[in-house]
Image 1 (cartoon, rainbow, N blue to C red):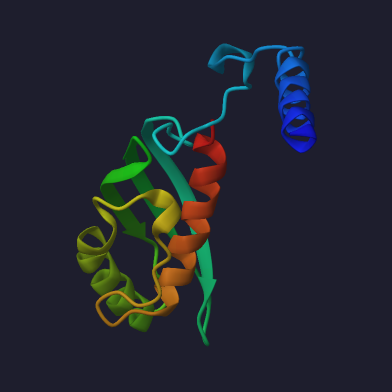
Image 2: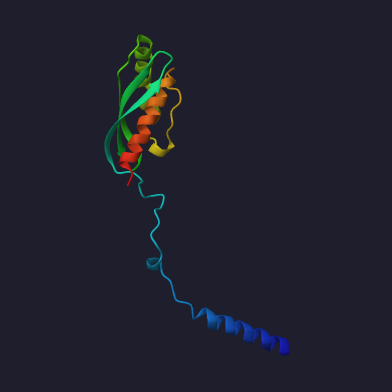
Length: 136
């Protein structure tokens, strides 16, 4: 009987102390960027990317349109310095849209597109610049 009384008193004390803590509501909590909030501003962005080939340093221009962090359009223009680069840039340009349109910009990192692997380095470089420009 004594133990039961002590247990009841202990529980009552805990309940009493719990009532002394300030109440919190969702409004009191700091806002956190949920998964639904975009990390990048919608719009169209252009950046250049460079990459090395055995013969030269090549540059491509990448333009992407973002809506809710998703790439809705991509355009790539090459400026090949060598004939082999012209071939590979052309293959890359012809295939890149199928790879990145509809994808979250944070989830893309291309490595080989339509047989072109070096051009991907320039593309990824340009995407990083675009992400920095578009960041909210």
